[in-house]
Length: 328
Image 1 (spheres, rainbow, N blue to C red):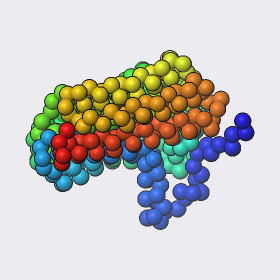
Image 2 (cartoon, rainbow, N blue to C red):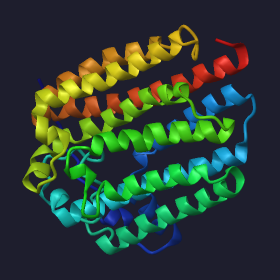
Image 3 (cartoon, rainbow, N blue to C red):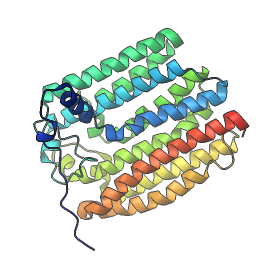
Image 4 (tube, one colour):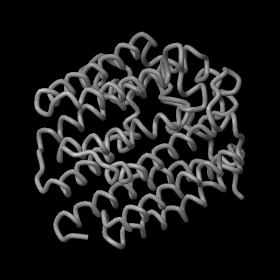
């Protein structure tokens, strides 16, 4: 095997220096870690497609407001996670990160933005999400409050406060809920006015795939997280246990799609993509078992996991639209 290339360990301060509007915008946008935005955009898209399938009509302003709210919660959570990990010392000690996928944005450690500046940005993003939520409240009623409060609460408690969800081994589950169940079921409800077991079942694959993204991203951070008391699942389970949980998540995604198809909620070909993606997941699981000793293999596995989520969510949205137009 050829040696791994010299890794890029973080952004350079020179790349984001300057006070021009363009540079400030570039700095703020990249601090949000936009590479991961599909994890919030696609659940809203899939849930809205399900709602359209159920209701037979589509509300574009509501869809756009839901998209803004969800992406801003996601971006705010990313930024506040960087603040929390800086306070806890995790990112400062992380020498095995695979940038830009693990170890945070590195904006604080690289001197691009201060911790206070990042905290203000994170709070501002959650404020924008709250405003979008209030507009949805005026349009759709009080039910939206519960979706919004749950999302914002998870975003904050994941990294900050007396109970850091990421540090006690349930961060992966909470992210699966925040970027799977909540946006999928919530977007479906916004379009259709209905919440039922089929919508919940439809959200499970996306929840599992997004939890798998977080899980594999935590593998290169095991040493730093463990040294600073951030007891993520990979820290608790080790490489073999983490690989097993990773595979179980992909198996759950495939099983939920099969179950929903058998109930008549999706076309008969719907399980094909999740089953094929499960096969890809087995390859990524092998990289997890090898750990950071094979940086190139781990990087490919992380990128594969991001691709699985993207392909899977788009496939499910397409299946829902197929049923809407042609029937199951």
